[in-house]
Amino acid sequence: MEVSLIFHAFSAKPIDDKLKNVVEEIEVKKPNLLVLSARQFRYSLHQTTVEISIKEPREFNVLEEFIIRAGLEFEPPLTEDELASILALDPIFVRSTAANLKKLQTLSSTSPIIVTDEGRSFYEKGSVPQPPQSVQIYAIADSLGGNLSFQSEPLSDVLVKLPDLAEFIKISQKIPDIASFSLTEIQQSMQSSGLDFHTPEAGKIVTDCKVVSPTKTIWKKISLFVIFDALADKISIQIRGGKQIQSAAKWLDSLQAKNKISLSALCKSSNETIDFERESALKNKNVEIAARLAKIHQNAVQLRDGQIATTCLEILNAATNQILIYLPWLNQTVVEPEFLNLLQKSANRGVEIIIGYGISPEQELISSEIAAKLRNIKTTDNLPCVQLLYLGDSHIKEIIVDKKTYLWGFHKYLDYRGELLPTGESVYQMTIPQQVEEAYQFLVHRLRSQAEKLWNHAVENRDSQLAIEPLCVWGALGMEDTALKYIESHSWLELPPEWRNMILRNLKSPKLPTDLK
Image (tube, rainbow, N blue to C red; front, side):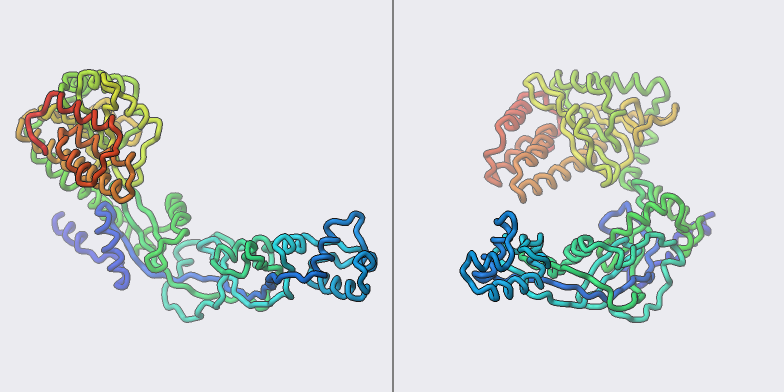
């Protein structure tokens, strides 16, 4: 078995040499991520040369203005000769000018004088269109990205000697033929592509688009990453052009979730090897936390079945100073009436409560309803008592009460992804002072670090509302001096007075024996 593990551990994963730096960046930035495969592929784009007609504005002259105004204001419409009579002009001048406006599609091609919608649009800007200008550009249909774009220069038609992605993934997204797109759709696509050919606010309008040459297949190089998230226990697929993640990644993720993609083919590895890599990552996640728990495990008391709820309730109800809780998931199953009632009773006794939460970045946000319920728990001075702080990166459920009792595992108020774990799941209790202190300092360090990040972010954006959160956490940890130093060092004396009152209340409340300042 040991030999087998060594070979698995040192087996070469399919990582393209040119992508090693990107893989390292991904895994260093988020240690919970493991890149199972990083390979380069090619896939086909469809390029079509099209000719567009563009109209740009120019200021109208006096006679053009009179003719267009007549077309807008007279009812019934006038003929050119009738307007010439009103203006006391030779009809030939009016007819000639009107004929030119008709060529520019400002006037209807028939008599009497009627202004077209396009003519009205230009007139409102004090202009008429110039003769249309023809420009050749290139329509690029991307079946992988599922979109149509335009660019001024053609794609480079070079030979790409890489595996064809279509051999591994059935690319079923279809792009309609360019000729089937409406003019409005083409105009919108041009704007989305960053081209300035169609800018109606400036009077520049694309009025036509026609295909002038057959569609050509162009090969494009892309990088594909198969990534395992040990915290979420999930495999995802990323496609990148350079370092930019492309939108097709979400579509590929959906295919992979439906088992329509062969990971073994993409990774050039057997399913057994992929499963081994995943299991290894799962075992190594939260290594620091797991190592700490393993150290104290032998001295802990295991609570079983009926003991769990009874013991946890007794410990929480006996809190006199402080309750620290960490939950991977904070949802309706956890935040139920009995739990809220317990926290409210603790608040009434003057107990400080901090709840850290989050198992991975995807779960960073909690619902506003749950946050409101917890923040509605007030002290007898009508001040918020529960401090919420996202920590993330842990699947262990932990409670520390008054620095005397440490619980970890599962009990009635802790759940896993919204579902209670099966009966018989263990919860451990530790009361040895030195080991409780170690657990306490570890969790407090994480709380303080996150509070400092929030404070720095608040300072950068001068966000008073955000600054309140770290101040309250420091206050709940008995770090009033630290909180005041931060306020003074940034001359932020305008922070709401009720939070300063909370700090003053902490000074009057019972203190835990260790100085954390």
